[in-house]
Image 1 (cartoon, helix red, strand yellow):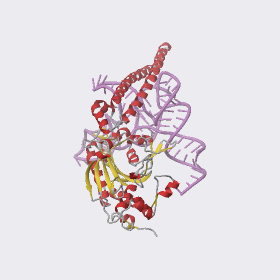
Image 2: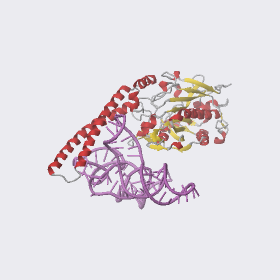
Image 3: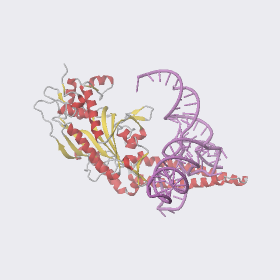
Image 4: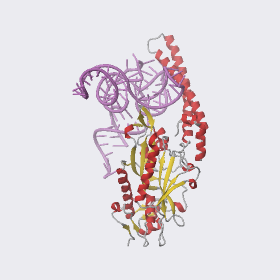
Length: 425
RNA sequence: GGAGAGGUGUCCGAGUGGUCGAAGGAGGCGGUCUUGAAAACCGUUGUGGGGCAACUCACCGGGGGUUCGAAUCCCUCCCUCUCCGCCA
């Protein structure tokens, strides 16, 4: 969330930003509620001060008459305070709700526009793979190789769930270990996080666990949710804490399962592993000072590019437009891998995403660091290292051979222990 | 899951319902002393909100209640520890 006072003092800027981001939010209302809330606080504090003074006067011995007068006054104050507190609580709640709808401010270089078409392609690395034979999509490949099984999952679990078998199972382990090793070398702390988090953590990160359009599975009666990304458990790990300046930038790599409801998502671009209810992901996360967050964002993007370069998968980098950012992000880069099985003749499919969320998340999560004796909010950034399901799509489709077998990218061979996935007899 | 004990500041640890934002240690920071260091001594050392400021309000696991007044009493939830049960 943004700072109340900032919203009030920069109303025009915030309203303009809401418009550019194509979000429904009411900054003016926030400013008004904030002003009202502060007036109530002032009145409430006055009353409480009177109450404290009144109580202090009764510490010693008093004539009964005098004491009764104080008691009566105290009772009156108590009533006034109760009434005022109710007003305050209502205002505070409304203020928080309205404020959470307001998106982060936007990096000046972010392209304008509301849809994917407005995203700006920064560069293409590698050449879209072409074949001298009739290529297949990952669904055909995975099924005929017997390594991806949607049919069994359909029976046991439902649509958009899957079993990974044999070489595909090994491939998942290889990809996660590959990413972990690379990030370990970069000084990241490696963590396997819970796949579940409390609702207030989700909200602090900027997810809305409730509502019909929510992508989040909630756990009945627990106040917790299945996480959609370990961004939640990594970012939440330092909630309500004050970091030392010398431990920044703090770099974490998290491995978790990710769960998404994906209600209503269908169509040719959602087929197979592309949009599923559960997948495994290695996520990068950085806590840093405001001064270094832009360069840390570049760093995360560079790491993502390094990973896909080593995997020898053609990709392009996209600067995501204002309307497609999501509330917490100040700026976002996506990497889209070439997926030969996508659409008629192949296409770009998102495989990673890295966001600089500045202090939008740390404000509500209360994650700060000491600077010259004062506490300041940290900046928080996240980026995908490997989203396994989509990486598998890219590998199967780009490395398929004419006989339907799959060559393993050489960087992964030390992790898989095999160089090829062949048709089982 | 059952029985008992407990949750206080960075940590340890006191706290008859009013003088407690909180004793006393330890640690941190600043200083005196010292060639330097240690020791000793002195001072300082939580977070958030409102206000230009002086200042003020809130916070002793969370929430609610009793009271003129709650860290202190009551209810409830959560968590931790010990014992038992169950289990990978």
